[in-house]
Length: 253
Image (cartoon, rainbow, N blue to C red; front, top):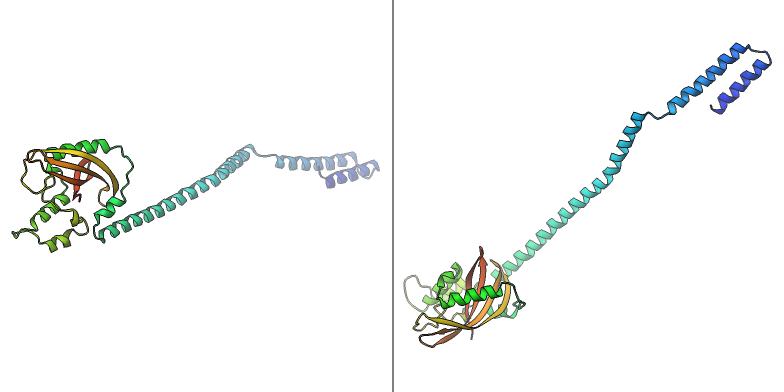
């Protein structure tokens, strides 16, 4: 009961004491005030259903904030990842364009090789040794095979053969012709017995390759067993579709 109703009830009681109103009138006024107070109390009682709804709403509202934060973080990471991809792809493309637009310099390649050991080294060495000793030129990449055919024919005036200037123009951005003093991948250009032995096989290192991502370089001495002649060669080995190929051959001067 609020203070106004309490004072009103006291006033009606004094009037009853003074005989100004009957007991019946006093009880009627009292009940009226008490019923009013009871009604106000009932209104203040929380409805269980409404209370449950309010709790659920509050919980859902409380979950909304971390969900929103999570969504913001997710999209932020996506944007960051996309920007990183664009930048990395641009750097990669710039690197490729720089390589494509510069004259091939094999000495520079040798100077910047990563000489740290790699887990595939022994496997590639064994494969390369076997390839050379079996005189297996079928493992030359298409690019390397075409290059050897062109440099082998540039000194001859034959149909389909390219001149030295044409060879330079065609291959200057891919192969360094200063290291191409040969016409056969495993021989010295003289008569051959087709029986070879490999010695001093050495891993030189690896480098980025614009087409195959990574290339491995090996140096070795190839001896023609029948004629006794020897040549020193450097081979560039690449992995394409889980198979090894020779993608570059260089005389070591």
